[in-house]
Length: 323
Image (spheres, rainbow, N blue to C red):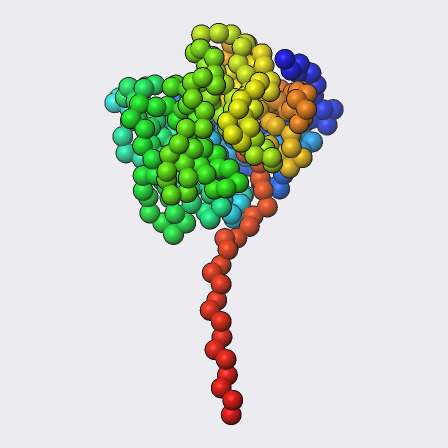
């Protein structure tokens, strides 16, 4: 059992900026947190935290924001979902936010769909998971792929699964969490699907929610008990799929992300004992509160150094003929 110390840095400061438009510039090493306090259209936001804990609003006016990912150029992509009261239908989208906070729609999805996971691979392909809300939580889920040069294709389909998060390992395999049927799937770069963890890795009524790999190739998964209070966990899986508890007694942890020093940051939603927090765990499992008193924090991402995509190697120059 891991004890979480309720500590907030003395340097912690809150900066509330005006709603709408560009709000705060991204900086390397900053932590971004998606917030969805009421699940109403336009009520969500993305908070930005400097390494010392200073908070600011990076984006606002979002509809049910979930997972986030940075591309090679420092643009932030986030899944959002609006709800139409008249038709009782959801509309999933991917929002693109530039480093200075300018928002635009990157993609929308047809159908009664809710946006969940989003992640880039090393070559700049964007992968997005959406869940069909018609028969939630056992409706079909789909993972879409968006190449850097444009276009959209189906990378994987799940007939009755609830895909909650996506992450890549160091070998280019895409890993997906199925929170309802208690599976963690792995996809090779060519799309070949295998099971990384099955229901035997989880307790009854417990499913994986958020995913993150550490620098050693271990997979960390936040879990949710559907019927219990304060009994959620974070499991640590070795590369061969053996899972053990890393942190326990949590209140609906969701998004996970590692910083460069190997510390694990956790969005703890706090639905049974609000408000929520962002927790920080050192590699040995000691936990503290990094950002307290948040209204339903969901997913996390760190700003990384923008790295342009690799350019193709030019062909060799012809050898000059002797005169």
